[in-house]
Image (cartoon, rainbow, N blue to C red; front, side):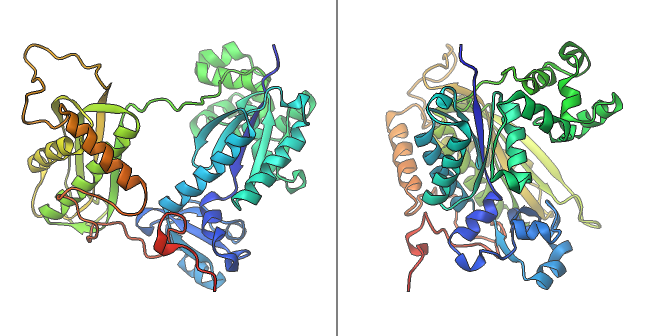
Length: 431
């Protein structure tokens, strides 16, 4: 059996790179991207990192630094990032036989057998060049016999400029050298708590962990960390997942741009979040039975009354129809709403999933003649399919009467860039 070979392709400073993609004037300008409601820094260009801008720092704490160095600030533009991500992933799928999209800016590639046609280092350089030429995004490539080692190889490709952005870690000698200079907290899946425990056992580097007894690590930690030890030693334990696992729950939630004190505004927000959640549910080709709704004020607002609550409700039969869940969400919101508070966040969670046609009806549950649910009718599925098709084209959006597009509760996005690739009116114009 052939030795497995994986590559991890990771986009460099992805959100910031997307913002620079259609702005050549920002080629060497420091850029930061902010979280929802423009609260904290969630992405930084190389130039911004060199100026000392930290990840997750609140915007107000670095405003002076931003003004001093003329750092360009952007609100999160998720439509742009998702579209650029899909373009990168399509390039990778054309280059490798099997691809696992790991996150919006990362993908694992199965390179098993490719070394018989081309050197792995050359292939990595071709991947890097192809993505840059076709999409305009810089990536780094880490190649190794396991996914954990591929992660470390990618980390080295980013950290050490001399690598040219590609590291081939298939040779055992090179693995040992990199493991010896890699702190244990840089290993994929090793968090702060585990790092502290490992360091108390005199395990400080990736090589220290690789040289540990797998059975001992399993007894003292978990089977997950045992697999990490094996992967660091070149034994592949984590397979490529070409098909993403089915979600067990779907959450749609946002912090509001300003406090919500009016029930109708909260109802509009909850209706919109419910619509988003059910659209994701249909993309998963699933139905759900349970909806949980939550609202709360800002607990850090000193001197103001605080209130938070959540409540769950069930449909009589599973559904994927937006109207069923908006009706249920309205009922639940009426149960927990309290006047006299300024709410800063609300959201919904769908759970208790079923595949279409797999839910067994009991003698006492409604049949297809039940008038309270839309889901049982064939026209319901057809209507939702039409709704999704129109909304996913990006040319406009259909929504229920309970939703509205512009309100004070919408996210604060003072520095939002155009939707360069998904809205006709925002297409770049060449003068």
